[in-house]
Image (cartoon, rainbow, N blue to C red; front, side, top):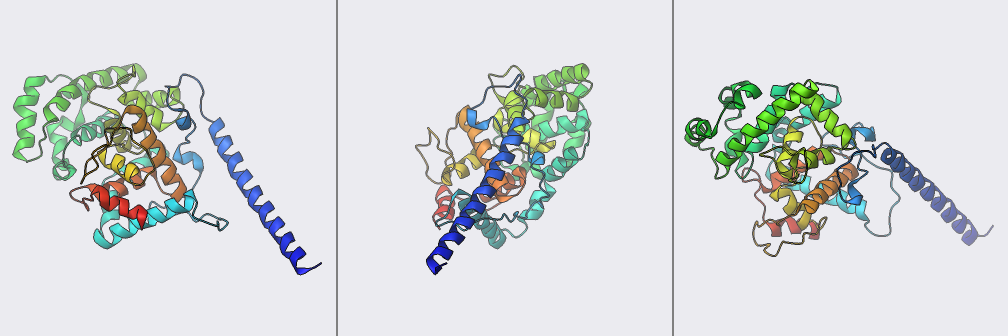
Length: 350
């Protein structure tokens, strides 16, 4: 056999091995997709319908450790290697400019909540309501202001007791709650409306708890109805068009609430939307003003697409969705690096 024939034969073998590996990957994805319950699902874009739960991937993942995949070396950078490269740039930027960023994410408690849920922890009604309250308080404000007073919220909200909060009215919010936050320089322009709407939320949650035995069981039931997919769950309680929508929650706040109680999803707020757009992972129909830190005006379908792309990003680089979401968030936060849109774009261009 001549040398060219040997080389050709080796190339044939290499291609056959590559094709077999890709076939196994697609079969595994198909099998995971088959697990999704096709009944009673809320309508979402077609491409969202078979995103598996992170725990279904059966990966043992350190929060900050990239899973090293066996890859053939491509002739040029493909989508997976571009995301790996981008993820390494994000981590490297935070490592050099915000050295405690990992500790800050861990201290936030969302990763431990996800671990607890996956290990079978049954969240109490008070814990569920606490997660929702913290999410609502994050709306349209600098989170560092709320972060400073988290330990004091327990007393203000009477241990996050649904039966207490559901008896309040708008006067209680105006005369007790808003002055309390203002004295601590933690108020916002939307806080009064959000806390008033939260009263109706507490009443609805109380009804659900009585009907299902607990809020944890209610959410588990809703998750099952929506195909065992946390993205559907967020849409169910956050979309204005959903019969299960909770007052005071839109899709971004619903996502934050579910993260707080152990569901591994991304929060499609203005910061993550800016990132997904600047990284060219999502195209927004209404983002004419991209100056400084302006965010796109995302519609519902685009918010779901952001959650989808963040999920794919996290799965590709081998980290928790919530960990990736919070890492990117620290690029924007005033208490983080406070990146502009142009600075974000540089991470792609470098």
